[in-house]
Amino acid sequence: MPLLKRLKNFISLFTLVLLVGLLVGCASSSLKYSDDVLFSYMPEDALVYMCFPVDKNIELASAMVQASFPDLKEKNVKKIVSSVDTIYASLSKDDVSLVASGSFPTFALDFVLNKKNGWKKIKNKNEKYYESTKTSFELAFPSSSIAFAGNKVQTMLDLYDNQKIH
Image (tube, rainbow, N blue to C red; front, side):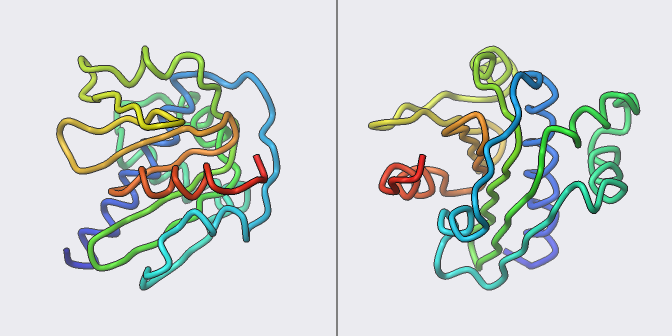
């Protein structure tokens, strides 16, 4: 997959995580995880790793959301952006992976990420995740403080389940 297409996929994933944050609301403050822990959920063979602190790049994050959803009202853009603290991303030849830290209440996920909205729920041994019926993207919220998105979310969930920090 060409680099430009992967970057567009990254922007779409970033916006999707932010949008779900808006739709399910904000119920609690996020737990703080170290960069090392959050990067440990990424594939080891990535070509590029990146950390995107949202609070220091509010204008850029807001512009990305607005560009992806031009009909979204400004107050909703602000709500979306305020739910995410930091985005961690990796790009490889065949994968875009994203870990977001923030506040992601999980109580309404099944309502938001449903078949009508283009999502299929997949249950693995310990966690559930959502697969887009329109793209190859998957989305998971293993805790109310962490969101995973990408093409290989199951692998990220396995790494999460094998660590003793949560």
